[in-house]
Amino acid sequence: MKTVLTEIEQGVNEDRRHAHLPSQPRTIDETGLSFQFLVELLVKALFLRGQMRLMDIVAYSKLPVTVLEPLLAFMRAERMCEATRSSEAETAISYNLSELGRLRAEDYLRKSQYVGPAPVSLHAYVKQVREQSVTNMKVTREQLTKVFSGLVVKEGILKQFGAAMNSGRAIFVYGPAGSGKTFIAEHLAGLLSGDVAIPHAIVVDNEVIQVFDPLVHEALLPTNGNGGLEIDRRMSTDARWVGCRRPVIKTGGELTLSMLDLDFDESARFYQAPPQVKANNGLLIIDDLGRQLTPAIDIMNRWIVPLDRHVDYLALHTGKKFMLPFDVIVVFSTNLAPSKLADEAFLRRLGYKIYVGPLSEEEYRVIAKQVCAELEIPFSEEGFNYLLHEHHYKSGRALSACIPRDILEQLSDIANYEGKPATMSRELLDWAWNNYFTHD
Image 1 (cartoon, helix red, strand yellow):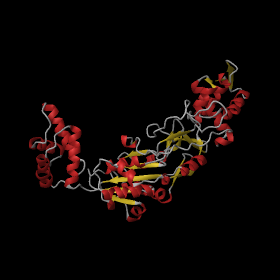
Image 2: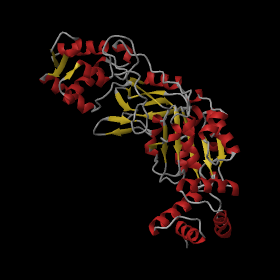
Image 3: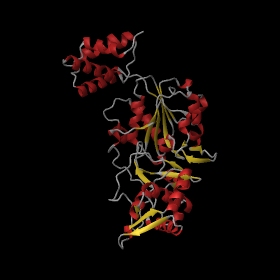
Image 4: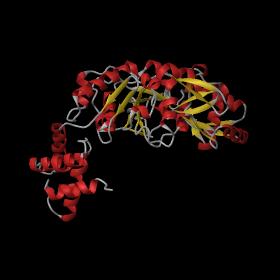
């Protein structure tokens, strides 16, 4: 699983809205977490980090002083920690575990080794996902033109993608290999507008599920010098949430059914969220559908309820099941025939079925010219016609969008090897073609 972060996502949507982060909790009740859960979290943090100043605990737990004070007072009263003050300033207080506190920490770590930002409640997460739903976006012709500017894509296909993104429903992209399906799907990231709030983690029945993943979530820059963490008592945003761009996650042949469930670490005793949860309020691209080890029909059947009802059901290792929003535009991309992947009942649930086929001669020529300019290879009309008639048409190879770049890059490679200028000569085109395609 990986994120899709390219230059097309940077600065495309000038009207991008900032994420609306929830307000900072002022009391323990407002965190949505139990008193005991928070005590255990702080004890574990002090055990692993050692002595911590109050401001360090604020930054580490993402909780304000007004929430931490009663927790730390309880820990001192129960002789689990000790406090030292280096000056009269409130921020000069430091906390360290007592021997009893260290014993308690060892017990707590056996239950769960999660030590990090305080989670948010399941209720708060569901509410936030619905407020920043992907269906709130509007994609216009102007946005689409800007994102796909300079790219060779048929106007009819672009219109289909524009409408599909506005629907918020799943998109099924199919067509022959090399026709540019994945390339187009990844560029859809540039159409995502509005930022979102993603929690570091959520808690369900005192079980922690990590959601924010720096490898797939692009955090926005903090709006103030301390990243929104207020050491004073003024109201601000809840630092347990991270303002991010709408997520774009791509997974391909490595996808298995087990990856779509919670990933429980037996030794650490907490969970990682599956890709569809990390992609909530954004885009999830399932590339090369049908190439997975798991049969495609099993993977497709797993999506029937989420796609139809926009909710997903997950289960903890304890057996408890719970519901999460499924607010994500899923893009299925495949070069297999749709009838080989799913039945009519499932295909009906997919909002848009978009066929991406071979190019016309003129479209193929435009791509070849663009690649030549990029690789500094003089474009030759004679060489281009030779490629078309002597190779594509004689061999029956379709004019796929990927071929011009692949062939011309091989021209550049062999020219560099031989120390000669790269040209679209017949000799080099023959060499690149025979080197690129396999032969029985």
